[in-house]
Image (cartoon, rainbow, N blue to C red; front, side, top):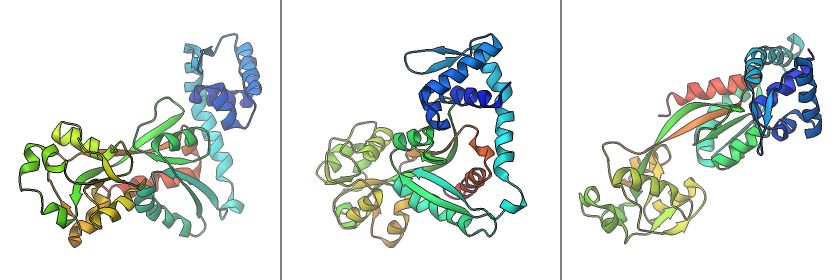
Length: 302
């Protein structure tokens, strides 16, 4: 059986789409379709059921993928690992994730790999929303993606990376205007008169906090909207209003007294980050090293 046909088959099985598989393989969609039909003809059985959006593997297709994929991944690992003459070869790792978390957490951890003599990794980074980074990963634009949602399907594999705690904060001037204990009873009357700083008009972190802590929706709109939590932090320190921030991002400002945590709920809201790869690409040594490195570093992030 032709290994090229099996490689195309496994890629389609993981991608769930001829179109997406073609992009990953660098082939045209008709070429992918032709290869799958050839393999189906050789086996005498259908491997996929064509649907309006993508394809679904048949029982035979699932069985073949289960048997073939590990061996194909092993061959890729052998081909990519190289011999002694290639040990000093620098591989480029393409990482994508949210700008704040990637800049403050992931990149400082991964830069150690760029200094590792003989096994160096070059880094290229892209910022984006969870949807953008996962779509880019699926399309082959990135090697690793950090996202706040777990991807679905078999094309991408995700591992929980860490949890971040969210904190309701304000500058001391605004905090002094809130009567102690009022937030425990009802957030809306206490905070609706204060300006709010957020990363989006929908107040994503504020709305999540309100839902989990106060079991309500925020009855406020943003006074300042800036699409970067580091800029939100700077605005709140400058007394622009109140906001909700990840604790790792505002911990230093809280210690310096530049910000005040307005509430200490018994169960603080958490958001989980996932580290995602295309299924099978952990067979590539440079991706596997970066993946393991981030998981180790994340032990100290929660």
